[in-house]
Length: 147
Image (cartoon, rainbow, N blue to C red):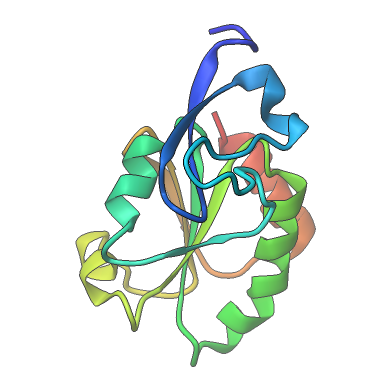
């Protein structure tokens, strides 16, 4: 695959699948359906309803933070996750999934401790890690694990 080959990108606003040349991801592409920005640099909100579509339809790897509102380490890690989403917006799609509000998805992936970080690519789990990391270690983990 060359840099100009189109990749599928899910719209964070309307969930439409868009095809964008890989070398144009940094050019602020817009959704063909709703005209909103496809690359926002912000984590998406994963739910039981949209999670499967997100991990299957995105050609970008999907980095997921399984978390809960009552979890102190999850709250401390949230800014690190958001910063990574902003810095790596053209390399991966970042998703936060509240395990309390989305117990079906959390159960399906056997999330037993939080935060749990997972990377998916084209619908398949590549790796997972339990526990919050400092930013430098999280970025190193991402750079080692992302396809």
